[in-house]
Length: 292
Image (cartoon, rainbow, N blue to C red; front, side, top):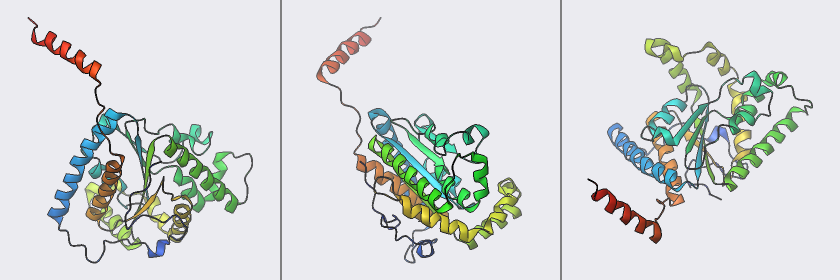
């Protein structure tokens, strides 16, 4: 199976990850200016464009990028900037919000499973099945709408869901899906600034939701839920990366570097043409050149 790309933001697999120690800002020695960062991101996007073509042509692997974060962390912007050069035919992006009545009539993995990327394609989940151990954990009253026949104590329920997620992701990895999971770690102070910006700028008013502010009151509960979920489900074949999100340029470039490194590790190549087929090509060339 594919194994994780090394990074200072790779979450270890031993349960020692602590949200309180995870960086929300770039390292102190980070000095890449705005123009230099933009040029490097553009270079990464160009290389990702080529890698996606190889992925599509080879048709053996698929890639799933999972983005989870608190509101205003920059999920949409990161997805847009990192995948801006990808052929839309080879990329599938899904945003998972409040589940529908049909989705609630299935198990919690159903609605995302049916949206998984095909071989040769990149799939992006803007939020995902992890909402079931994040938002639902912070608001367990949502479980009432799931019509579960048997509900164990909460601690056991979350453990069971972690187990289901682990089994699900390992099955995908065994069958050729490269899974990269990004937690965009924005600080509470930076989130406040971005919410105020949404209120102050008319062009951003549509992004603002009163429910987002109410959720800030549950910040500590969310951090505990993220810490437990990330520790329980970060594995070599489905790693979590805790990306500092207070600086958007740094966040986007860091994600792009990791995705590009994952592609390069696959050593993708265009399919080779065998001798018999190449001889047939020569026949077709002759026919085309001799057309009248």
